[in-house]
View 1: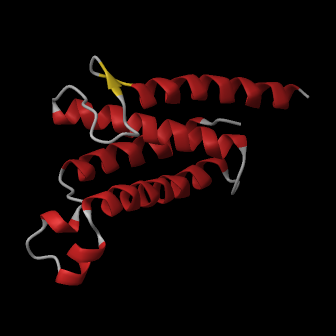
View 2 (view 1 turned 90 degrees about the horizontal axis):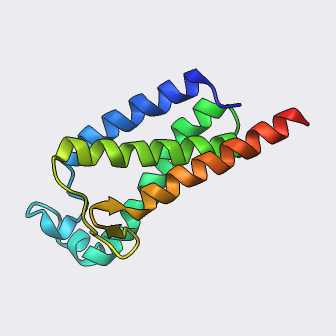
Length: 135
């Protein structure tokens, strides 16, 4: 069941994460004080994928706290809700029109396609959760 408590948890986490993300540089090759071995291993491409893994893991924990289940439709719903909301908050705080910064982040006329897909998935998963509750 999607709860107000869960929505509050993910909304606060998403807002705080968006604030932090505005100042983050996830590519060690761009940081002058990074150790040499780190610059060699974490190329811009490796950093890009490494960041996505870390991002998903970080959002999975509050999603688990919100749903109270390690893996469920509710947990997935909260994960998508949190990451989509964080993305929207990030672009609002950044005061820029969203742009495509990676192949997996397509933007069409300033609209991030993954956020549109995220909202659609939220609606579909919520419908599924309600159907399962009726059974």
